[in-house]
Image (cartoon, rainbow, N blue to C red; front, side, top):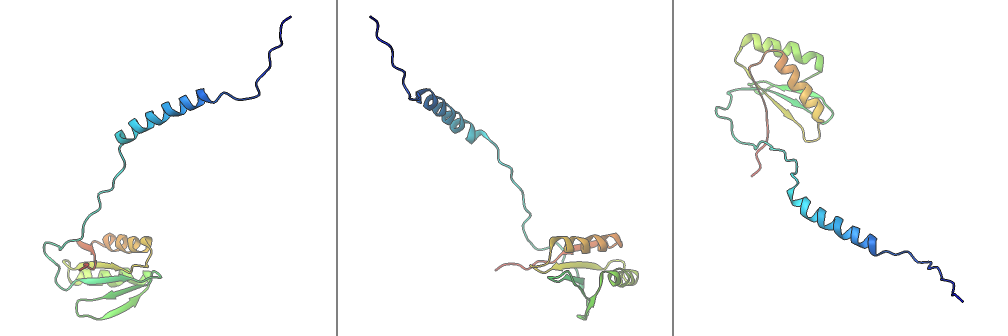
Length: 134
């Protein structure tokens, strides 16, 4: 008489381990060859010729605007008042430089909107004012 074969109730994991080890080796070899994306950020330095008596437009934490003229007078303005004020200054002196200073807590969008408005008016020298770390 022949004996009946018993069935095993176990899963054979050896092939799965082999596959996982092969995948591990493939990833270990391929990972150093992958190029990562990098961003080349500009560094803060001094301008070649710093502007004399620039017009400063400051953007506050809530997006509020203030204009500081070359003589040191500061004036809070709204977005609608900014363009006529700057156009009058541009008519007086076409070579006027404008520096935009954004507060650390000001949104990036509000600083860019101010920059775009100033450039659209026709100013030739427009820049961002930064503080240098010591």
